[in-house]
Image (cartoon, rainbow, N blue to C red; front, top):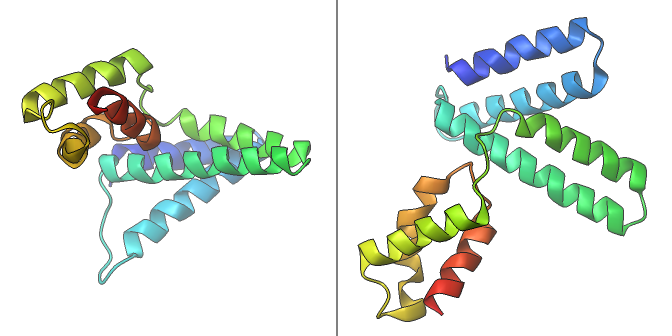
Amino acid sequence: MSALKDRLRADLTTAIKARDELRSSTLRMVLTAITNAEVAGKEARELSDDDIIGVLSTEAKRRREAAVAFEEGGRAEMAAKEAAEGVVIAEYLPAQLSESEIADLVSAAIVQTGAAEEGMRAMGKVMGVVTPQVKGRADGGAVAAEVRRQLG
């Protein structure tokens, strides 16, 4: 079993004992998402820490999007709940990259792939190199925007 999944389970037990409703419900939801990912597909498998970080990133993104949607819909209390769940999930994700770090990675990938002359046609090549480097540490949309900016 992965160390991250063990940590999530241990933290869930601690949150339940401390009667921390927000943390325990959020960790239950995350562990359910991990279990669903493990049994998805043709046969069940054990997720690695990298796979679990991918699930956590997806869940964090869902919380951000839901918070924005609730805020726009005038439901501030639900937006606050989603944002709070996002904060709990973020504790288990690797530190996020800054804009300058993303720009540096994209620049290096452009040089590595020789994509500078090709322009926007080479976006797929550059994204293919950058995406594994930033997985779980940066939003894909922000990375794609930086690639477009540098290639365009």
